[in-house]
Image (cartoon, rainbow, N blue to C red):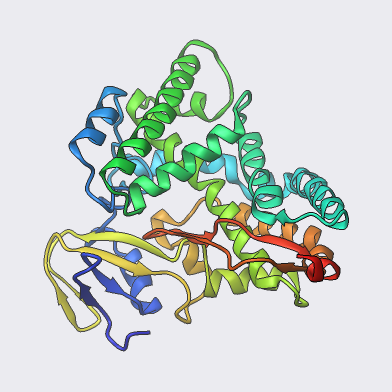
Length: 356
């Protein structure tokens, strides 16, 4: 807590709102605090990077996270059907199977005296596989999806220099080209997957790609990050999985901030904020409720229930292992404007620490 309801941070270039009550009020007023900047690049893109994206037809028209217009409701409703409480509950056995298999392999490697990265070996792929199953998407290369997702988060929420931006723009363009191909296929071949549903809604190719671009990233990469953070915080301690997940969401969510921009001059608390001012909302770690990590109002995360389930199941499956291992290094972090989590968690069994 800063003691100030809103302050301008010159280094970040945002009006920062740390108070969870005020952050909630901002999120509940999308007419005054618009989502137009929600998916804009935090670091302005270079001309070279923009050319690469333009060559791929890359466009992000208002659809979900960046949309407060009339089209938001029907798009959100179409996507929400994939994340109904019944569908989320039904996917728990698959989630448990995917995680348990990976935990068993990790424990075997640890027993053999090897180091294991808990992020790569356990947390990385299950959320992607579960999401693809729920969305009806088959024949997706999961390692490519993970790489595309990580690079896109860095491109839009990181601080890459021009050379790194160019690298990231190429992978974002590759991802977008793949999305366009899937969209074209959906227009030609009847199906019941995410792309077909969005096409049937009457969306343009650009709108379909915009929805799927960030949904396929946020729907699994942030859950990997949530699980990774939960693993880190639960190492060597007793915990109740569901309570541990809520603790992480309150104190160290993988999505610690989110952005808005003022449609007109506004007051946050008692602080006057000018029109067209970028606002950065603190969502976690400041005494607010766990639900704030998923947002509130018309843009609340559609996958909140799924993320909670996946994180809980991961902790349940990994509990014995987490009690028996130690970190071998200070974990390097994903440290972006709105995403934070361990990049890796290299561990060994406690009995092998003398040899490592």
